[in-house]
Image: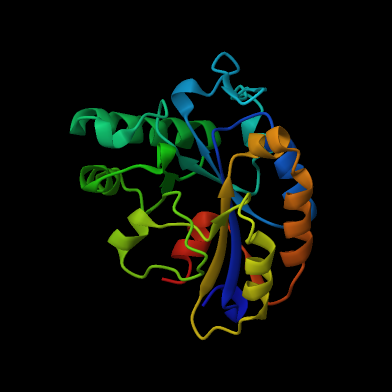
Length: 231
């Protein structure tokens, strides 16, 4: 079970450490919801912008991030956000281990999880992540399900409930609220906060948070708490 005997958890996962995370954090904090932020410490700088449609997306500088993300979880996203499965073993380890070490130093916390850059990986990436003492890792294949994998190796290929752009987001949330599970279940939402700005859909996040927030039967968890707490 989760803390206080709860059987349901809600958690969010957002990537890349971009400027739009500031608004995302303000919204989820208002509703008491927790998230994990997956960062690329090797390029965590405003000098590493990229474009999504007509929006120029900028990562944030490191200095203010510990204060911004206080109360949430920090996780690995690769030192430089590469396609890990295309790399040799030594470089995969460098991407994961150095990102983990940097983030632990910057945030003065233990880092135990990750989100795969681009959602892509293979067996070598999984085994290397395990050697780097990572205990869970997320892909990007929406499942529309709430189950939590039980075996440690299965937690290294975890797939989320849905992306925030999924047209079934709110119906899935309603379904989750209605269930009375006999084993721990998690609603795991993922995405990139710049998508809310590019798509003009910040209201979707607020609707979701308003729907699932403030409930006595839900544990509002970071990814690590949601996926590892019930072990």
